[in-house]
Length: 111
Image (tube, rainbow, N blue to C red; front, top):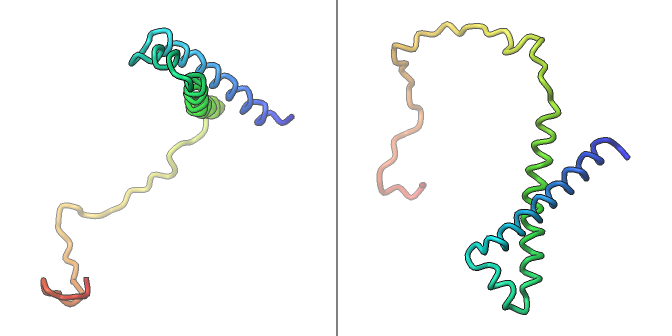
């Protein structure tokens, strides 16, 4: 299996594990009376499953993004920033630009 696919699967599993811990913490702390809503509803298990899956998608994406960004390493040895040539312009004076379009009145229908 390619290394990138293995990295992706690993990070997705970690993200869904974090999601399971997050949903478990939400239920254990009874945030917004969620434990009561889940246990006293016939669709409570489905709600917990959907909450876990949707949070898992978010956490897996963030986990994979962090893993990819950390792969870059620190290559600070080479040159950075290009040639940095200065542009010689006097920005203290305004520049006159001639308008070429004809002026339009407030009641023109071509807006």
